[in-house]
Image 1 (tube, rainbow, N blue to C red):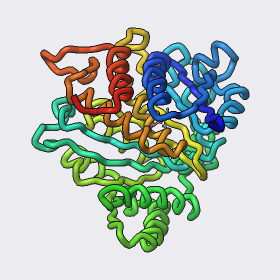
Image 2 (tube, rainbow, N blue to C red):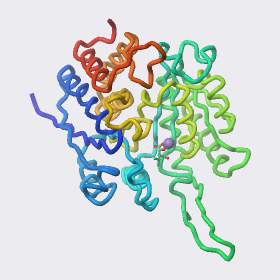
Image 3 (cartoon, helix red, strand yellow):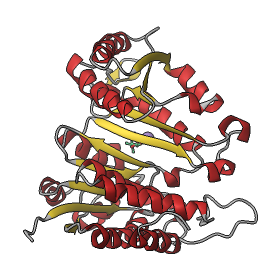
Image 4 (spheres, rainbow, N blue to C red):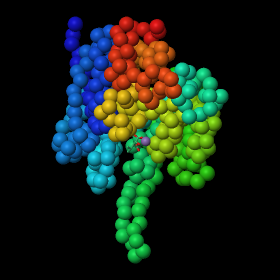
Length: 368
Ligand code: IPM
Ligand code: MN
């Protein structure tokens, strides 16, 4: 058999990153065997760990490693140890934002799924989420207030003046909207654009461009919602959304909210994509320094990030599906990490639940 090496850059980072990544590798090994994948996993430094080891949060060698890879499996970065560094040197700003920009990862997909068995974990009243829900936030990731120029703090006669700039051009909106419509075509065929078209110029442009993209996708329904109202609807009736499309900052906030109503940040993966198949895959939650090193973190977000990687960067939808089935099976059978266990339920650790998921992947079954 011709050997075709698919290199994956593994950047575990800080906090719970290394332990959930370790747990995910247990699943990856079984997946490789089961689906005949030939993957080459290459670890690199990132975040606070990279500051300590190499002097900066995103060393050049890590960027080169990512460049040489098909995809990046990313853990999480940041923690109290690096919080007193100047803002531009802190792990989040100095590692994650440049990675997104360097690799042109303009579309961030954040699925928020509430499994029916985990309805009790949602902070919402069970009546509002009975049966669970499944929505996808598509967030623009390389524009808007995060990167717009000018971005600066200057001295004035009365003190200081700080500026961030929200700027979007047609092509930046068009390409991410295209991703949202394509995603909707495999789902419930509905795109909702969250904006502030009652206030912002950029939102008016978003509406105009997104309408244009919608015209190319007649099978998909498009509607609009003000972002503040979207925040409210997410806690009233999250099931009303299918694909929620947002500019960068609205997407940042609304995706956290979607994640929270889905029960636990520990369950939610994300994919950041650009042109082509390269992507960066990471859990939606952060580095959770408060529980790091204790072996109790939920590795499912990282494991499901691997599933997204298989599907979107490797073209292996069956491998992705077998991970999802294994996760759903473990949840159905009552496997719960601390974040998921409600009173009286038995808690298992990071490694234990990962081993169970890996076992199910190896058996090729989600059930029983
Ligand atoms: C996220 C994070 C980042 C963001 C931070 C860490 C820079 O909150 O990925 O959602 O704001 O994009
Ligand atoms: Mn965020």
